[in-house]
Length: 158
Image 1: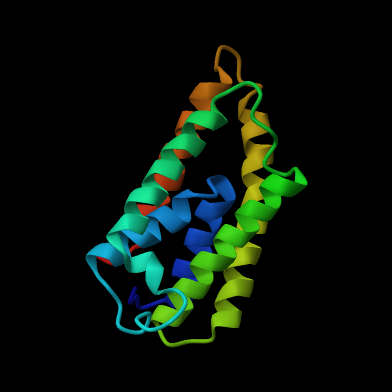
Image 2: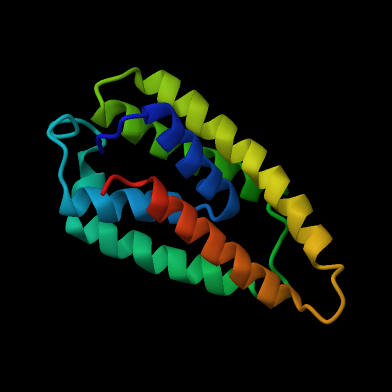
């Protein structure tokens, strides 16, 4: 993943992870399976470039999107869900920074922090949107899905 601004790509995909934990790794894997990065070859992160990883992450994203629409879906700021989002953002950050031959630790910290901030921001924005008359929670969730996917796609290099 080469980009003119590694930091903004990491912050952006970290934010996507804060909204949808599996979507950021799915987007990274989809991109990297089609555009393998030599800097990831021979590293522990090389699996993200495998086509099978791209398929698995897409299936996980579909399951997360469907599960989010259920009335029993837990709050994203509950500890297990929040931890998953932060780990997802940290993973994507590590991948982006490693692909650009930069400090993996910096990528982990930046991606994780972005996911943490976006988890809380998107939680409270969604709670606010749920108060709009005649708008059902699944509709708000679907809008969030589109925002997360659109943001992720716009961040990836051409």
